[in-house]
Image 1: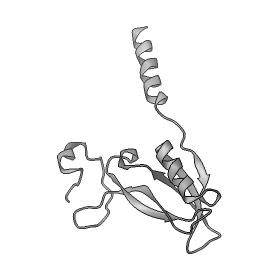
Image 2: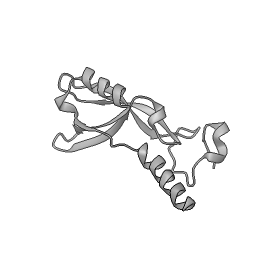
Image 3: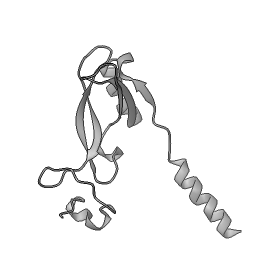
Image 4: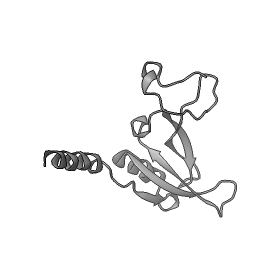
Length: 122
């Protein structure tokens, strides 16, 4: 009985903090509204047309700050079109570059190397 109760509490703790990320079409909101949505919600997904191929719709998750990124990721600016601007700058998460500026996939994670900001050398 105690094991079952602990399992239920653990499940609720994990699923209780998870929530859906809202999705928006960037062309239906102004740049100020897009920034406001990101600021108030922490992270949102925007759909937007490709700059090179306008009939291709792209999407990305934009965040308020790096605290909304996964371990090993940092924020980078990206411009998207909005209702009132062709270029609205927001932040999105990207993989952390190595010291040589290259992005590499790392297996396992960086929990053992947090003192070096998670940058693993080959």
